[in-house]
Image (cartoon, rainbow, N blue to C red; front, side, top):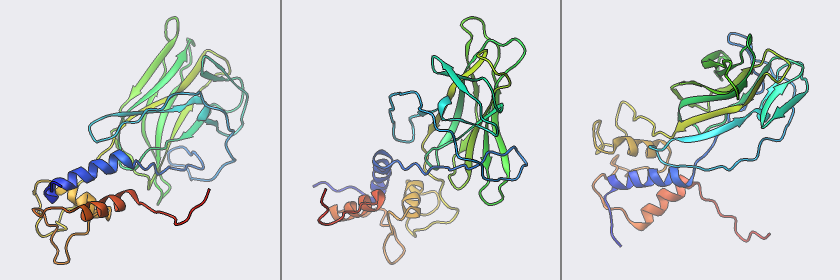
Length: 268
């Protein structure tokens, strides 16, 4: 079997991690305060069935991934009123004007585009879509970005965009807020589409391994493997940047990366 240098193996293992084990640590938002308000829990959400849709996934750090938060996944703040939809574009006929939904993405991804899909046939009122971050330590609420709808000519459908330039951190919590100021079908929304890309964390300021100094080729990937506990290096503090890798070492890398766990004698 061919053997490859450990420096190159770090890149290969990182690719396998991203390809085979995309972990979505969900950001659970119990309440949805305004910026500057205290963060308090609320009543349970009203559960509605989302629009059926095909889900495709892409892996790696160069491809962009799109995911949806459909209008049916939002819940009304405070007083909840009846909802209706026309061609999967939802509108309200009563209750509070604000709708909220938690944003759930893999930790560490780069969120670079938010698309608000809407229907606007109202000459005087507009909808808004905003993204907020809740700091898990201080409970401080920060607005990341926003966009307004605008009245469209027939057939009145539009898409509003904003660019949050956000590295998603599941230590904090994120939620979307849609504001609908009327109780009729002149303002509707289908949902919010998010575009993001997976990233590799930047290396620390000081080197973890003596043979992978600052500025070394593949240092970022090697440091990411070490931070994740996938590689531990040698007892003398070396990574072994120019050593060959064995099948046993590759097995250790993959098992740690994927968190492999087997239950003996499991019976269905």
